[in-house]
Length: 376
Image 1 (spheres, helix red, strand yellow):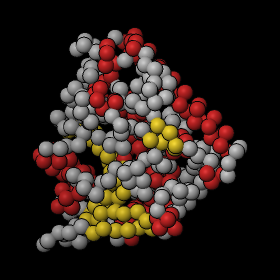
Image 2 (image 1 turned 120 degrees about the vertical axis):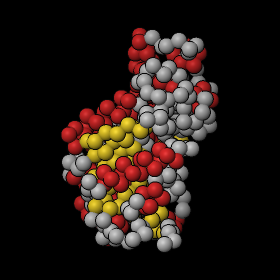
Image 3 (image 1 turned 90 degrees about the vertical axis):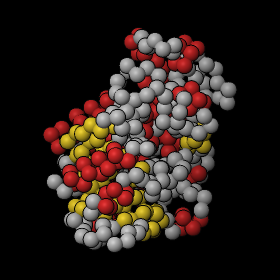
Image 4 (image 1 turned 60 degrees about the vertical axis):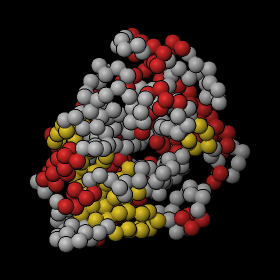
């Protein structure tokens, strides 16, 4: 039987002022999903896969899972391709309409796949679907989540999942940057690229480095709060926000020193050579607004801390560790496993890189594990 994908447009909850530049999207907000039904049209098992901002319509697991008799919904949130305005709490509502779509198709069991940056959003979703605790966004604005917006799923699969956007930023932000200007002053003592000469970083230097990373992120957070307070006192409430840039956000010593958080990875980053990735025009948290920064990038304010959210759920959890991952490390996997406790099942996919590019055998292995576990 010939297979085909369906483009599904689902109405979602309206967002904030100028969240989109499109007047059509603001007045009639829709999210777009790729839906692949099983060939035999049995509605036993479905997977939903998503990311806060990446386009997952081409995800490498869609066809392999569909070929194993599962339905697959690849959901793009309203923030696809642009995280400058991303509010994680709003993204929950987008995921919820996708889960409801699968329920309406009659699937007996729905498994949520949290892949890469989708892991923390998946855990946050199920935490709130279990018990709603969010009544504001982290910037203090009232925010209503209703139970009917968040139908719970039956299980969560975490695949090469990092613990959250804020956790990633604090471990990658370049602490050698001493100010946030266009041409910042650099502290050479904290330049990981200047210090690395194939020798391991010392534990003392690493402690100083990690503390300086946290301090830089704290300085940015303090400025964001001060700027918001100033705007809220001087302009109309709906426009009390601002845009800004954070430079150099790919400076994790683990990309050069493979003895740190050791796995099977190669030197470098998902974006190639580490120094170039750190200096690139685009990158992690590069373009922000004040309110979206607090929701997704601030360690002190974000609710989307993956392991913490996962610990407050009660469904079975599958954790797949790609052992050659350059951005998800053994400490991340350990945090997920601890949060899942006895509900968790861990598999190592030996030699697997983050995107499985060029590894059809590994892709088939992952799909087989997912389908078998989902039916278990």
